[in-house]
Each structure stands twice: as C-alpha cells, then as structure tokens.
Length: 84
Image (tube, rainbow, N blue to C red; front, top):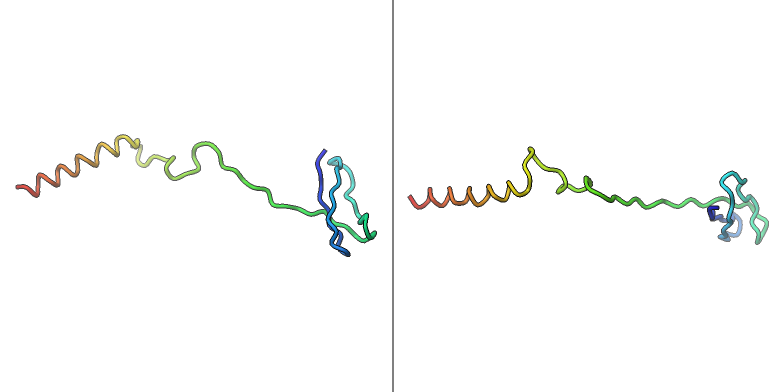
C-alpha cells in the first residue's frame, strides 16, 4: 500500500496516511478538523543505458577507433607539405 502525504489548508499541518489505491483521500485534518489536501511531489527521472549522451551516437557510420586513426594521418600529410 502506498503512503500519501496530506497538508491542512487551515493550519498547514503535514501528515501521512497509508491507503489503498482505490481508497478515498483524507478530507479532514486530524489536528484541527480543517480541510486537508493531498500533496503531490515531482518524480525524478533516471536515464540509464546507452543512447542518452551525444557520445553514444556515431556520426556518418564511423566508429570512434576509425576517427582516431584518421587524425594522425591528416597531420602527417600537413607536415610533409610544409617540409617541401
């Protein structure tokens, strides 16, 4: 059974109740008998696995190892041109 958090709109008292999913929400504050409402919280999102980072996608069908091999070859070609 989930635990729900409530807040009283009159006295701002926070309390929790363990309830079934199909149970009616608590409408009365146990402290002052005022009107209570359910508090909703944002849920964190976790991205796990591949495909969530820019490094996970290859460009033009080249693998990262073929990119590394090309860079030194390009530098050598530039060095040879400057020596001539």
